[in-house]
Length: 379
Image 1 (cartoon, rainbow, N blue to C red):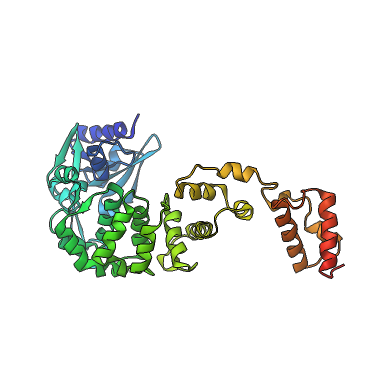
Image 2 (image 1 turned 60 degrees about the vertical axis):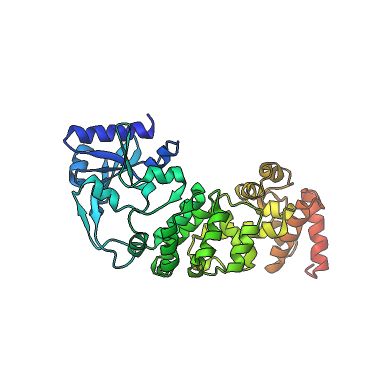
């Protein structure tokens, strides 16, 4: 069964027990655009407790906001009770949520018209012009953009993210509201902003979205981002293919390994971005290939739009890691090396083997180690 068939099964179960249910949000948008996404959310007239009674395998993942996760054949589906939202005094979350409202009220609380549609029994429920805006390739808020952005300023970043992902334009009034209220992004948690920015960077129209950010002055509210840096990234011919490669372009042009710190990304993402940024600076050589994981080498080729030779290049090396070197720390100790000298000796032998200046042979490496230690005055 497809995800849509599972979702239909949930809807039918709810309807059999006197409730209403619809597929909502991004899944409907993508359906109208011609694809069937795997990530499907549903909205229902039933309350969370009623949903959980119908589906034994369900988890109250956000029950205070009316959301439970229904699990069918190990597949999770978020099912949320129709709700309306109060004011957003912290520009992040609604102060209160009212459950048990109509579908119309539920869709009214959503950010953009293209995300405020519902799907049921083969029909799209479109109360706010979402299909029209998709046809016109325009991103427009449900209701006043000034109200929507005052409620949650992250919606400004979401609008720019969708602009990049869909190659759409921003509605005129939305642009005005974003320009006027961009400063409210300073009230938003950096992790939330960074996630949207990462999605923006990997969209096909990311350069267009970055240019729009500068035009609207939004970049001024992002850490370590200058107009010149944005221009340099836009002019770079390399293309981000994931979060790490997107950040890598900024690191490369910022020429600062600490540039990413205030964005609060994971250590893995920061490490991968720094590695890719260095590769963008130096290009590939034997030592870079040896020191870089194959999946990052693959990312490097994809960024450059080139044939992926990562596996072939890694396999062409004499050794894949230091453990394969036919000389180790114990051998160095036997020859009289101690402390830092061991580390330096192994690094020297490793480098020369990788560069194919020495064969990876026990006798050859041992003799070279003796000579190195003599030159270093160790023996």
